[in-house]
Structures are given as C-alpha cells and as structure tokens.
Amino acid sequence: MQLQNVLDRPDNTNMEKTRDLAEVLAENANLKKQLASKPKTETISTNLFGDIDIIKIGDVEHFELSLKDFIGILPIYIQRSSENRLDKMTPIFLGCYQESNSSLLGSVSIGIAMNDFVDDESKNKVKKGDIYCFDANTRALFWKTNEKLWKNHANGLDATIHRLHDHTDVKAFYYQYNNKKSAESKAEVITGLIRKAGLKSRIKQPVFAGGLFSSALEYASKDVKKPKGKQIPSLEDQFKLNEKALLALDKLKPKTNSAGLGITAPAVGSLKSQPVIGGLLLALQRYEDNVLLNRFVELYCSVTEKELNNLNSSTSVNAWQMIALEYGRKYPASRPTGFLNGMVGNTRAADVDPQMDFVLYFISKYIISPNDTYNRHSMDTSAWKDAWKGWYADRDSVGPIE
Image (cartoon, rainbow, N blue to C red; front, side, top):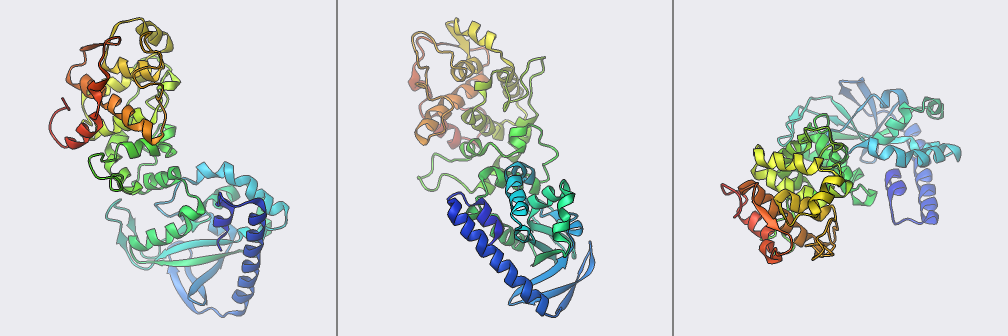
C-alpha cells in the first residue's frame, strides 16, 4: 500500500484512513528490517550521485539517500504541478510529524535511465544515468521550506528504484503512483502534460497554468458526430489536439487599460466560462492566426459591466456582443432567462450542447462578418441548433462554418 494512495483517497473515512496509515507504518517498519539484513547486490551508475549501491528485496530494488540529496532530484518530465498540491498536503505532512509518524514520509520512488532515449511526443531527451523523482515531489517541495524537520530523517530515505528504458516505462511507473486511485485530478494530469510538452514557462494565465480547464478541453475535443462512447478522446489526446490553440488563447489579452487579463480573467467575471473557452479553443484549432478571432477575444475580455448594461438596452448587437450579453446575464425583457434559458456557465451534460451550439454559431458569424447585427427580440433560437456538430464535421475544411 502506498502512502500517497492513503492520503489522497477521497472515499476514505477518517477511521479507514487511520487504519490504512497504520498498515503503511507496519509495512515501512518491516521493510527497514529487511533492508538492514540484506547485502548490497549491485551498483548502478547515475549522473547525479555517481555509482549507487542497490539492495534487492524480492523483485524490488532500493537504495538509501539523504533527504538533502533527494530534494535535488528533478521531477519526472510528465509530473503534474506539485505546487498546486502543496497547500492541500502541508497539514497532512505536519500531522505525520506531530504524531511521531515521520517514517510514513520516509519512502520515495525514483527512476533511473538505463540508456539514452527520446520521448517521440514531447521530444524530451533522457540520458543514460539520469535520475528522476516519481513519487514524493510534493514532499520535496515541503521539505525545501521546512528544513527544521530534516532531523527526523537523519538516517536517510528509502528510495524504490525503477529502471527506465523508454517512455513507455516512464508512463507505466508514473501512473502507478499517479492514477485515479491516488486521486490525481484532471487538473493535475493536465499540468503534467504541460510540463511534458515543455510549456510550463510559456503558459501565463493561472487557470491554464494550473490545468483548471478540463471541461473546456473536453468540449474542444469531443467529436459529437461520432457515436456516444467514442466521442471523447483520452485527456492526453485532448491536450495534444489543443496544444497550439491553448498557447494562442493564453496570449490573447485586451490591448486597452481594461481590468480584463485574458479569457480566464475577463473584466466581467461571469464571462469566464468553460463552454466559451472550449468554443474558442475549437475555433483556434482552425484559425490560430485569424485577426478577427483574435479581435473577438480581446473585445470579449475587455468589455465592462457598464458597457454591457448599455448594450442591453440595444435592440440589435453584433456576434461577440450576443455571447457577452448572454454570459453576462444581461437578458432582453422579451427573454427573461436569456436565449439559453438560464443555463449559461453550467457544465451539466444536458446544458453543454445548447451552449456550445450558441457559442460556436456566433463565433463563426463574427469571423464571417463582424459588423452584422442580430435583433435580440426577434432572433430565431433554432438558428444555432446543431452548430457544434456542423463545426466539427467541417473542422478541417477551409473557411468558417456558414
């Protein structure tokens, strides 16, 4: 049983968690006895520590290292954002020390490259002897700012070793520690994919950097033309499909002095919406450098509450304003719950299709003819029915959806 699985498992009651922690303590104590009695069986050469002595118990290899050495090991290149988890895990780590259970934190997992290899997807180059941390990256961050607790690990840490021969090994061992059972959220998986793609320093908007757009990513990747059950690709494939669009959307910000900082932090807070972000990602898959689409995002992000109130008194508005008024909840008197019947921003399955139809319809209309206007009192709501399906069907075609 792994410590991380126990601490993160959301379905555990306190009693179950206490019992499971006791099991981990017992396992760790037993492992220490075995390690102490086992002779060193082999030496592996590493680029960080030189030659290290290996102890083998069953089929599992271990070696001992100091806490100071451990925190110098880099996270594996597909590692989720440990920074996002630090606040959540710090009280749990401190609790282990307060209850004299520091040994719970004394087991870590690392990977050592046995040869050179390249991840064909991310192009990360791994050299023979490179060493990476697979499990306990959040603990490493915690220890870096809590040096006074190092004395509890004066005898060093026990590191389980995984031999890495290719990227398949990397994924197999990483997801052994970071799977659904250990409650890795979609956001955390996305931050790992961002790190793997080498984009961590390039993505600036905090919502994107923190992976907090999984619903939008799904909407931008879901092929609604396919049969149910086959519409949604894996999260990794969703990210690959939207990688360029994400970078493009992250860069788009208002060019005025508006308080809006981008699509994830518009001047009017309610305009931040997963369906809108998803629609823009899908549009940017086709029109990464489209001037009108870029202008759409800039105007949408920078519009103010006062400007929306003024627009709401207008009978006719253009396409980007239609979306902004709907998500700003500025409804015409003739439609007290708006064109989407009050479902704006909802991520329930039944509410997503109408929103994506609406958003993609007006994004397309703006790209075709940005100055066209629409009567908010007489607009036929059937106009955007199945726009999502139409957009996906022709996503690789030239020109906007008519």
